[in-house]
Picture: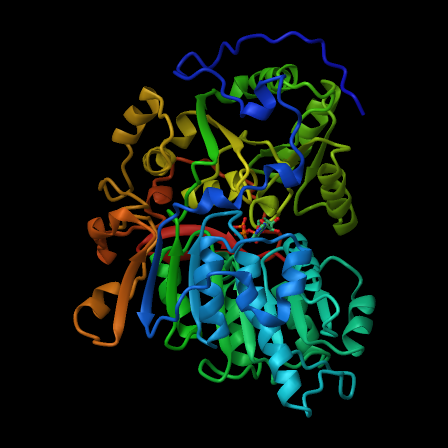
Length: 553
Ligand SMILES: Nc1ncnc2c1ncn2[C@@H]1O[C@H](COP(=O)(O)OP(=O)(O)OP(=O)(O)O)[C@@H](O)[C@H]1O
């Protein structure tokens, strides 16, 4: 569908406080460059300089090449994975050694394969050596060997597809269960047997309570977006699944927790699920690789729509193709998503919305239409913020900024994936002041240009208790093993290593200085209808910083 552009571009008037000209990645800017295909853009070498921190006892050697994973090598090559990314180099051998893992790595850097390859490889080994393993349903109840939990339906479906690719022709049975879709076909799939079950927590609990799934045989557990799975909304449900539904305890199962962000408090909660684990941090956790160019523009609420339209027109007129590059626009509320979608369509921009109040088939249709490029603009709430891997998203626009920096990190991480470049633009105004300091620190860490006005806001960013706080205080990379303090004070077995970085000696951690959530207690936001949370909603407290929360699915 070509778009009815009028071809003109008006310089935005509301961003007079912005000090940077509009940046567009080369493939959007330079008409002499052909539009790059997926394969051309894929540049796994972009991660070569990424520093990795590894800590814990008896750390296995990193992987040099995928050929070391004998069983899966053909399938890995089929997926066109030539070289492991840093998180894959370090996490895969840890997983293959049967060790528990807590891992942080940048968005789009290949975490899914990092936990899937060891799981598949172990199950294949188990099946070869133990003839008695049967995952066929007994008495209508399925007994998976591995469980992969993720927070959203779309992400579970995506992981399911990935696991199927990685285990192609191995005979492994991979099933996905998630809410919002009819349960009967999912039960029918389970009855045929399941080795690896990918699930959202709500539907899984439902099936366990109906005695259609038993976790007694689970030997491998992975939590993708683990910090989200263990935060206030999901934690009770996930704890129930992992600790109260007959799953073997830590030590008798292998547990792998992965995310791009891992706040200290969540690490502490997560350690209940782990046994003698190895902590990995690849890259500046919570960043934003240098692959994503980040822009922040000062845009009052009343000017946002016009500014957005100007931005989209500018983007389009800088392209050589008729279609608008895939653009993902984040808003705060479900109603806001619908309103903006309608307004964009009225303004001639092919757009579609995705949020938690849509029927599941509508959510899937929206995502499919966006992925295919048929509808190049997707207006989304945070339901699309984590994990989704849409290869050619060129631009993420934070029409409404999120309340915390971790959500910002996941949102902008929908672009700049697998070594490709990306652009992220945020509309900032007085409502977002509590985010300013974290935003500036994050952008500094990713070598981004920071407008002076934003630095000034950051200087005045105070938390509710009057202290200046920072999400990233205390760690060179922003992500560190919270056990470090106690380990450094004496466990002879423990080692903390920096690899692939010249800056290792600058490392210093201060667990107590790492503050999470406090800026958002400042009451700078009005009441919202935050809608990634259609389920039960309640208040939870971290360090006296109340945060409203609830769960999906
Ligand atoms: N070694 C590799 N070589 C080539 N492509 C890869 C490699 N590893 C992963 N990819 C591709 O990179 C993309 C991003 O991977 P993935 O979705 O696993 O990232 P992630 O780290 O889980 O991101 P997020 O934090 O957003 O969930 C996917 O399209 C995946 O197929």
